[in-house]
Length: 209
Image (cartoon, rainbow, N blue to C red; front, side, top):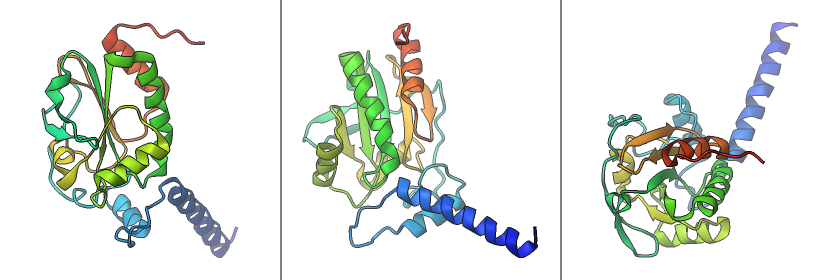
C-alpha cells in the first residue's frame, strides 16, 4: 500500500472515530458557549476517556482513591431540598458526576434506575451536574425527559467536583455505609459492575436470571 493511500485510510478511520465520539456526546445548543471541537481538543490534552470539565481539567486537584474517607459536603438539590452527604451514613451512596449534554451517560442512568428499583432505600444515588451553564430548571427538564428517581443537583462553581478531584464528566464513586470510598470509575460503569460492587457492601449474592 502506498504512503498516500495509507495516509488517506488513516484519516478516514480517525474521522469516523471522531464522528462516533461527537454522536455519543451531543452538546446543548446554548449560544454555542461550549463547542464540541474545543472539548475534543481538551480531552486529547488530558488523555481523558470522558469529557473534561473546562473549568477544572488543567487544575491541580486532590486525587481521591478507594478506601479513603469521602469528603462531606452540603448541598441543595433541584427541588430545593437541603442535604449533607453525612445525612446518608448507614446507606450506600453513589455519586454520579455527569453533564446534561453528554448522551454517553444515558445507559448509566438506565442502570441507576434498575438499581434504585431493586435496592430501594438501601441505596442513595446523587447525580451531580458539572455543566456550569445549567440552572436547576435545566437539570429538571433533563430529569423529566430522561428519568431519574433519585437526588439531582447542579454543582455551581464546581465546588464538589473540585473536592473529589473530578476533572471530567462521567465519573462515579461508590461510598459504603461508613462513608468510605469503595469504588471509583472515570468512565461509564455497567449495571453488572455497579451491582457487583454494591453487593460486596450490602452482603448480597447476585442471582443471574
